[in-house]
Structure formats: C-alpha cells, structure tokens
Image: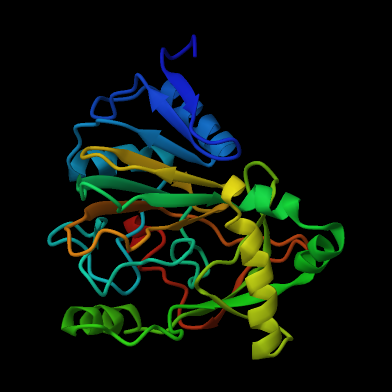
Length: 299
C-alpha cells in the first residue's frame, strides 16, 4: 500500500485479511482510515495483531468509522464505560452460536471491534462468515426465493436452559426488554450494493410462513453461510483487535476451552436500517426504536 505504508495479507480465500504495519494506538490520518475502510468492504473482516490498546484507544479507533453505540440494548456495559461490552467466556453465558450482532433492533451495528484481554492457551477462536459469498452460492431458484423473504429477529427466543446462576442472570438481562424486528432475508449493502444473507441466530421466523417451514428454510439458507469456504478462523493472542462488517457477516465463538478464562471487549459502530432487494427498510414489530442504542451520542 504505497500511500499508507501498511500491508494487507489475506487470511482466507473468501473472507478476512490481516493488516500489517499499522499501530492503532497512534492517531491515524484520513488516508489510512480510508484505506482500512476500503479493505473492510473488500475483505469483510480485518485482523490487527499485537496492538497495545486500552479501552479508550479502542473507542477512538472504532469511532473513526462512525458514531458509536452504547454497549448493548439490554446487557450492562463494563463499569463506568457505557460504550464497552465485556464478552466474558464464563461457562453458561458463552455465545456459541452463529449470529450477526444485535439484529433484533431496527438499526443493527454497522461494524464491530473485538479486542482480546484474556485468551485461553487453546480454543476460544472466533469464526467469521461471509454472507455475501453465501448468497452468491445459492442456486438461482433458492436465491430468487430468498430475495422475497423477510424474517422476524428477536432477542426473546428459545434459549437453552441456564446451566448456572450466572447464566440465568445473563439470560434475564438479555430479555429484560423484548425486541422483534422484521428484516429482509437478503440485505443490500449500503456502501457496496452487494447482496448478502441477513439471518443468523436471532432470525426466528419467516413472515408469511409457519414455524416448521420457517425453521427448515432458515436452516437451509444458514447452511450456505457457514460452509467452510465462506468462513475464516481467528486464533486470538493477547492484544489482538478484530474489525468486521456487521452488515454482511456472521460470527461464532466455539465453546471449546473448558473452564479456562476468556475475555474480549466489544465496541460497535452505529448502523442504519437494512434495505431489501425490493427497496423496503426494516421495521419494528415489537419494542422501541432503540434510540438509546443507536447512536449513543443521542442517548
């Protein structure tokens, strides 16, 4: 990258790139930010090894890509840090399912940053999937069907029975306010125009179809998102930062590290209401507009 002095090294054939030669603890000029954003749109997920960041530096970096959300619509933030969500790997509260962040509100985050504080010596990786290449993989008849489908996403779905008191407390926080939002199954990316499957773990029912048909169709579509060729796996080390485009990816943290500690801090960038192939925007079915969440500056 002659204009900025950093390098981009692909980490997967369809998704992911490591950014080399950028110190995120320093002030970044507009040319560097512009090229990082272009790389994000191209590769969907960017990885920065060995950064020396604290929460303030992570917030500063994330804010280069837009206004920040507060930590979460229902789950408490880190103490005294309203924009920072601790992603704690305590047993029973691990998010070991494929999802796109906070799709149960009308305006899910545009982008997510994750920074590692404590990582286990084995396991605890993060998998990120390219929902755009998944859409392109669909056979034409299935793609045409997906273009017309809308799904209801909710934070109040069938969770597994809590395994301990901490898990029960976390579930109670997660569903302390119910959100249901209708999103297009195929989202048109607002910057690139690329189409991607906008589903994941919060998508619980297809509008106009029954529970059984919804479950079967969502399972088929989700299978294309999580095909191995559409997925990159990141092996965390302390100090790493990951930035991914929440509008056209899903991610998953496998529960494969026993009772070992794992702690990340998450900061998200405010997004807009998804738009479907038909040009219609997502709409609230139940709950509020989450103004307290997007953008945080207005909260």
